[in-house]
Length: 371
Image 1 (cartoon, rainbow, N blue to C red):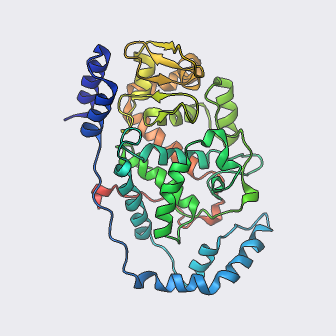
Image 2: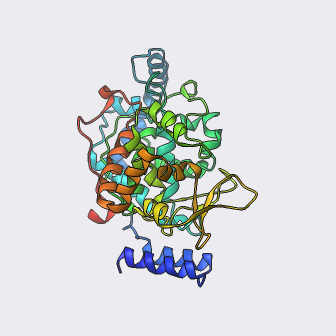
Image 3: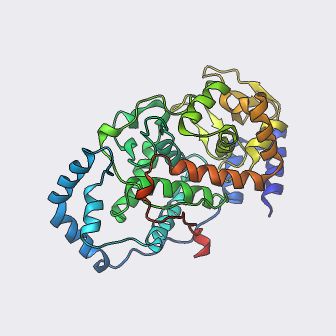
């Protein structure tokens, strides 16, 4: 069954008010969700024995190296596990990272009744929020040090609810202790996009784990209640132009807002676990009105009153420059996927020095169905 036909039928039904929201979500889960193949079995214990023994043997030396590196502004900070990885001559290959990808993809469908039946959107949000703190002037923030592990960054309002994603990824980390948190979280974002029927996103490892002192200040992520100038300021600080801002906003095709986190509430599209260009289509095709409620200012579709748009979403059709890009993406999903892939790859690499990359060129990771 084609996704476009299904979305049309669901949308018509929602407009007519014939399907309760719970039933609609169940239909979406059943009809749209992709079920990944089982994750590969963990390697035999002997394959990691050398690594674990090495970790225990060099933990003191690793700690010394950690603080030695952190004292220099020109040297990368290395965690104890990463130092141990080098000491024991354990050099992960692309195939090792593919195993991590597969394991991450394998947890998406374990969400049960959480949100719309998938953890993929919140894993993607973790990757984005941990990368979007970059400041091109001070060269601080970004995905390199995974500083959302620490307070106060973990407690910033924009990161509310991401403890769910961090806890899920911590379980993966325990199985693959050699991977840095920055690599793990961004690889999770890549897996989320690709496994939700989105485009391939180039990715490569090389991020290292930092310390609490490198956590970023509050206010570096977008404030959804603001307007076009705010978006240009926030994303311009990261190094993005107007076209990239609009393309990255298309990530709102998936997921939803929660009133107990951001204050806003509801999904942006009728298929919140599937990557499409529907976010842009709906911006133009639906009649949007201000929601009458006790929460923060947000818009709802006049027809079904089941969808929402943030003030920062709506400026994509009111700002003349943003609007031309939003219209192009509404009219051409292939163009949106191409640009979204490129801007996500750029986002996930923010703050990482070139010399840290394991590979000179990014990799394309296989979807679970391709293995």
